[in-house]
Image 1 (cartoon, rainbow, N blue to C red):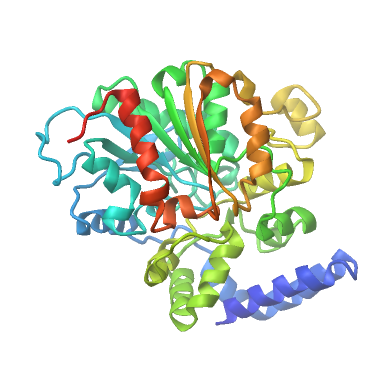
Image 2 (cartoon, rainbow, N blue to C red):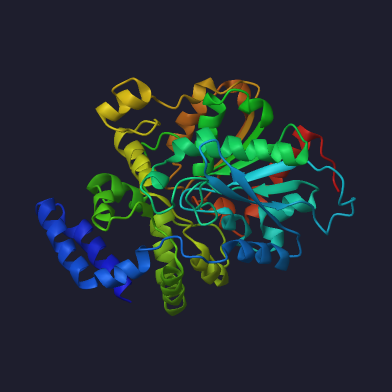
Length: 428
């Protein structure tokens, strides 16, 4: 439980002392704590890539719900190896299993992974519902999370491996997964559902990657994130205000919230001992869930979340909070000149999304990351021809689109209708 103690001390220092004393004194205090607990910290953080058979676990989870599951490795243009899962058909669908089905790609949010789509029972989970409707369902994983810690050349413990943000997920990860799905299935157009960060990388792909719109002509955004001027999420606002990323640099970590076996063991035990405390930790990071939630699934969540990402990716999010701009990563004046040819990072211009793309958005009145005011501003910038609809779900927060047990009533039927109408998909 020393880890819990350490985290508690750090959070206490951040929230109570930083406004009262010099930040250098804070770092001295933290270094004293670190000296006392460094062996425990090293045991947890020294190998963020501890081999745990997450792939087998994910496949078993899908199989236990009565569906087949495949694991695929997608190599991006810059060498990252992404783990992607596929439910090729449903046993509940009487159609020939060898027929060509319409592919749909589901993409997770910040600090998440494909596991988020299968948290609930089959009749409450979007991938299984889509599969029963006759779709070929794919679930992607961004670089640096549980299923995508690999590279063709870079050592995953190297600084270079972790030098990425959601920019790279939009430039490389999403286009690579789409191209791979098209190559494997032979179907030239796929549907896309993005949640949170999955919407952010989509804005980049659509607005900056030539021809992406022709491959993914319909896009469903759950908790869509762009400008975050009105964000109320405690974790991201704290990081942005107090530069918490500096604390992680003290420990020499490049990965944010790694999930090795020991850390997961501690977290699972923590959740068993105090389910409400566990829920508080998850919600502090991701925002609260307000919709109907199966509390008995929290041990499953705690055993697989968070999925992890890079420290740079978290810093990029905090930059958006501080600048109140939806922009690319800020490397500083010199770095920006080298990367962009300008002193400031360029904006991500959703106005440049081709008008042929059809977009349906879902946001919630309790969403701390995708505030309704910010989503409204985002919608106002999109080409009007692209908007199928913008649904505001009452009392829904950022995790509810994927975790709420009533999403199959309030959200998923509309998603099915959009896909069925666009692809002329008939009932199985």
